[in-house]
View 1 (cartoon, rainbow, N blue to C red):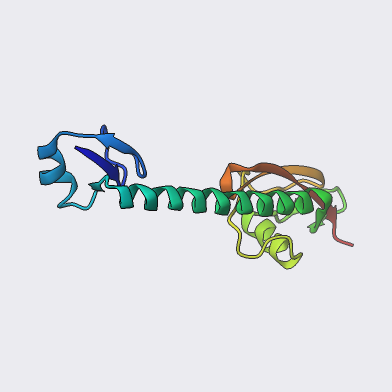
View 2 (view 1 turned 30 degrees about the vertical axis):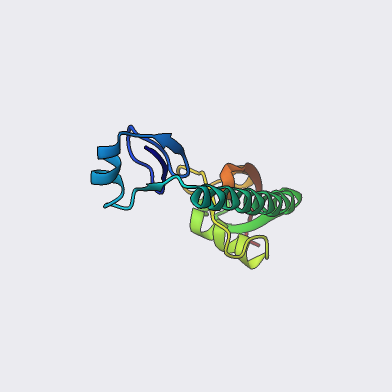
Length: 149
C-alpha cells in the first residue's frame, strides 16, 4: 500500500515521503496513530502544493536571513568595560549582553540568533564572534571592547 508519511517514523520514512508499506502495517499502525495517510490522487496533489509553498517560504526566509547577515557584517558592536590603571579588566561581556546589543541596535528583532562563545569576553580589543542564524546560515559579528573612561 502506498502511503504519505505525515510524521517521521524511524526506519520507515520521513515526513512528506511517499513510500510503499505492508497493508497491515499501514492499517494497524500508521493510520490509527495518524503517522501516514493513503496516497490518493488528492492527497498527492495536496502534498505537492505544500512542498511548493514550503520551498517558496524557505527561499524568502533565506533572502531575509542573508540580508540580516549582511547588516550584521557591516557593523561592529562596541562595549566598554571598567579597568584599573594596570589594564586589568573588571566585568565581562556575555552572550545575553551581545544579544541585547544586537536587538537595541536594530540588527535583530525576533529572529533566532545563536552566539557561539564558550565563555564571556574579558579582554579589550576586537573580537570576532561566530553566529548561527535560522536556516543554518553562519556568520561573524565584530565586537570592539574598549576601556571605560
